[in-house]
Image (cartoon, rainbow, N blue to C red; front, side, top):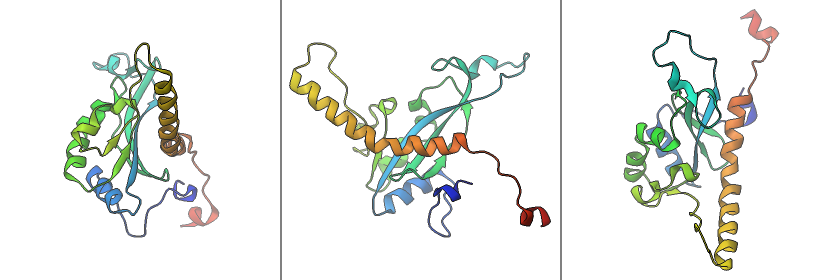
Length: 183
């Protein structure tokens, strides 16, 4: 299904781990990846379950699991990490998957991320690029204009990851074709 939507990599390439994805993006001519965390709504866990409250997402006030998704610069999904209970911030998922170590020791590339990954750029040798923080108070007009320009430019490059995630969330099961039914 995703292959029909253009979410494929080269023939014979199997990206089963985050380390392989980082190597693939670093070896790619464009050398750009996009990372984002996403929540997927799930049914409420059973009443007697011990860790039932861990599934409640504070962000969306619903029961959810959260995963980390890595796409290439064109928005093709390369990696979707394991889904874990939803009450966790993006940066924690990155720590759990050893993303900082993989990027710091890996090939030269850029990984576009949202503010949920703020501070990872320094830990990865500048490989993770996040938007700058805004002044809290009394920012000069020239800074506000520069901030808005940079934020929009960063956002327009990152939107491809949001489209890739949407493909994952919105995919529907296709009815079996007559060929598939006969085999």
